[in-house]
Image 1 (cartoon, rainbow, N blue to C red):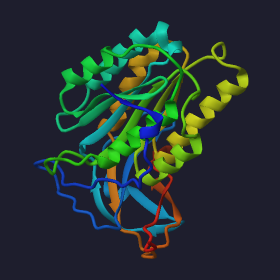
Image 2: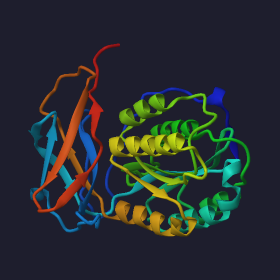
Image 3: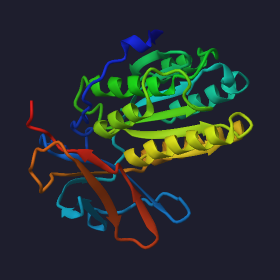
Length: 307
């Protein structure tokens, strides 16, 4: 196990890894300016909507329609950081949380890679990136509960690790995501929420968050604040937040996340605005299907020519 202490966390510019598709799929080679989107489409009951085609989608950047240069509805490979809260407050719920996370690992695809990060006073890389599900499961089950909650530090470490990982073969990595579970607000990170949000916006990494909490655990102010922070970072990155008061629902929630990953649409476009000004550009995706919603990251920072 590698312990990442606060002094070891390093700031870095985060980038999306765009690589070739697995054997049998169309190969996507992106230009430096290409924007890659992982898009989840749901109906008004939050059910996934499969089977859509490229013609059903419109992508807008800063309100301007963009030409789609790549579209896939196949299950693309993904690199995942699985974050598990192991602070002392998780003691009575850790075993159930571990088994639910193990069930999630069992649903990973053969081309997916994942790492396990537990967090208490520090962020601990319990298992570096691997395809070996048995190794990931052992790492999850080996975690123990103790100390405070360095949630933001763990997210920062995960974002940095996802930036650094590169596939040894062209088919290893396309999408990138963080799936985290925590039972409360951050109490001990040397990094604040705004820093993590900024890094997430620059990374292209989607964040799926499970908030295992209740008003009995926190004050009403803390409870609402923790929910708001998780929802904001998920919405910004195209992920989703689940607030759960009953640990028995954890397997169901992890299953929903796994289903989303298996049914995402991958869309790429090259922006019509070629300006390298480093500014934030908003993204919206619309679907030509009644009572549906397309969820993806809310924007990105344009490249910058400044040194």
